[in-house]
Amino acid sequence: MILVTSFIKQDKESKNMKSYDDLLSKAYSELPELMQGDDRFTIEKVKGHLEGSKTVISNLKQIAKGLNRDPEHLLKYLLRETASAGKFRGDSAIFAAKIGAGTFNKKIKKYASEFVICSECGKPDSTLDVERGGISYLKCQACGVKKPVKSIK
Image 1 (cartoon, rainbow, N blue to C red):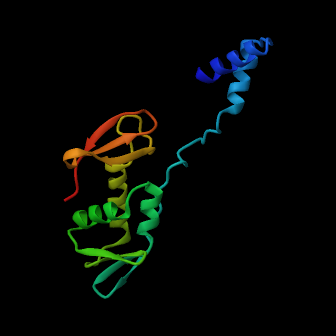
Image 2: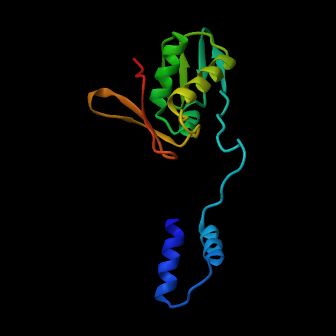
Image 3: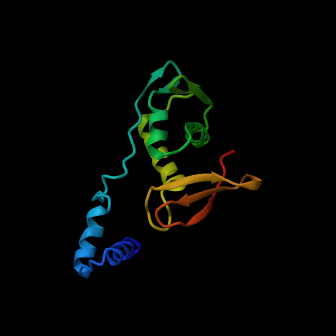
C-alpha cells in the first residue's frame, strides 16, 4: 500500500494520472521475487566422523551460519542436549562421546524449532537478542513478534 501511495504522489506531481491497475502493476514489478515452497529454509546435514571415543563435526559453523545463529550458542545447546563435553577446534566441533549423525540432525532440528523458527508465523526470519537481565528473546523479522526463549546453561 505504501508503494502504491508513493507512485500516486509521483504521478500527481508529474500531472500524469495513471489507472489503479497500472500503478498496481508497477508496484508489483518493483517487489522482490518471492521464493515458493518449503525449499527456502533447509538445515544442512551434519558431516562428521569418529576419532577414537570422540565425535568430530566438521560443518557445525556452516550449519550455525545457515540458521543465522552464533556457532557457540548452537554448540552449547548440542553439548547440553547430548550430555557431552566439547569445544571448537578450528572449524570443527569436537564432542567427548560417540554420537551418531542422526542424533545430531534431530537435535539441530529441535534447536531450529526452539531458537530460529517463529512460533507465530512459522518463518525462519528471526534474530536472537539478549536484553537486560540476561533474558533471551526470539524476534521475528517477518511478523514482528517478540517472545522469550529459554536460556542455555
